[in-house]
Length: 277
Image 1 (tube, rainbow, N blue to C red):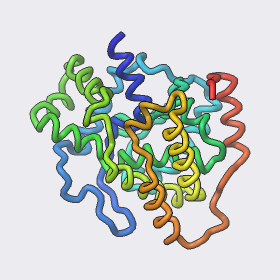
Image 2 (image 1 turned 90 degrees about the horizontal axis):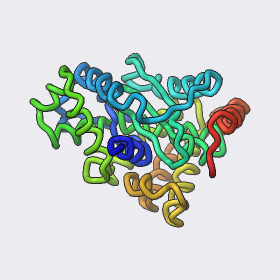
Image 3 (image 1 turned 180 degrees about the vertical axis):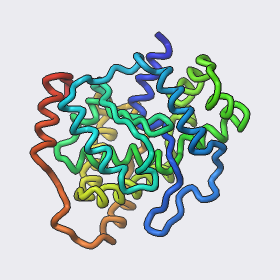
Image 4 (image 1 turned 60 degrees about the vertical axis):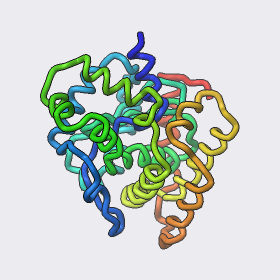
């Protein structure tokens, strides 16, 4: 099924469809004046429609125990943002490739492959924070605004045109300009992700470990990582910029690097949704 192939590519490209509100980052404005035609109300409505469209197309893990940990992690990271009071949902996509995405309206998906690639709680939190931070920065809705214009997006938010929703999903998953983040967007998501980690009480150096691991996998062309690496360019430039952010932070030994519940969560996933690492 063509749409299914595109949606699984969407998962692998990680966080392509993202919607969120404007926020602030240590005094630096986010999306203040950026071109975006969707209000938050429209964005949440669009998220509802798109989620209905992909329902059943992206396989998800149905396990109460694993889901409970995943929900707690997501809520802890979102809670420190200006969109913390908005309704979010978090899903574990059963896909061995690296990936994740977040539909407009705060619907986050991370793949079992991406989760399995992490080794500590702070690494998983960093991956989650990076995906969510693309939404906080509204990168995807900015791309949609530039690509489609106000009339089409308005119709999407209030209409019932399933073919139009498929078109949006397909374009964002196709690997073209709408499906790839720029270096600037990646740097912003890294910076915002660090802020989310700190607020949630996690060691922000988990972001360094996660990005270093992704750079290694992308450089070696590890199986299951090609589309993720294409959509999310990981470079020495990003790592250098991240180091500058981390160096400016005061040390705090109380921040969480790892926890037993994380490892119990991964063992649970191995039983209910085994992947090949």
